[in-house]
Length: 99
Image (cartoon, rainbow, N blue to C red; front, side, top):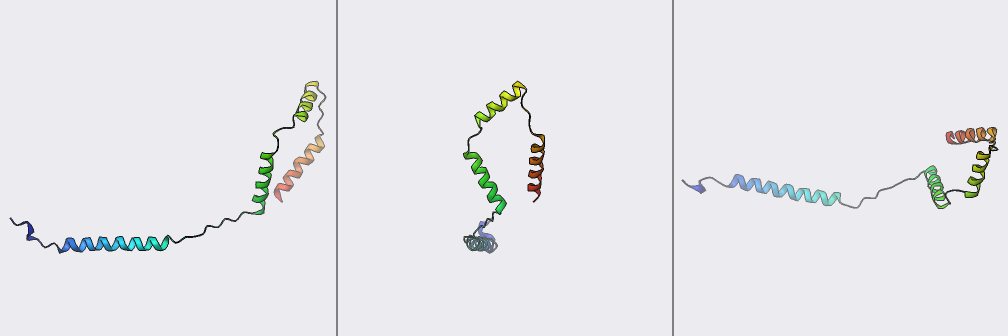
């Protein structure tokens, strides 16, 4: 039995094709690896929201004196919220939200 009986050119052709395809991939990757710039556009509303969020995080959490005063009024039964003012503020917030 001869081991070298068969021609090795089919294997050689396969290895050449593999090498060519690897070189082609490397070239296409180097072309696509060119630096591309990502662009982010931020709307005016998003900027305003960001500024509001930053202001909220930088401000103190509660106004302790005001909270204590309201708590005492509720406990004493003397807390009388202005229903009209509350309703107007709720409606104004909705109108501002829709605008």
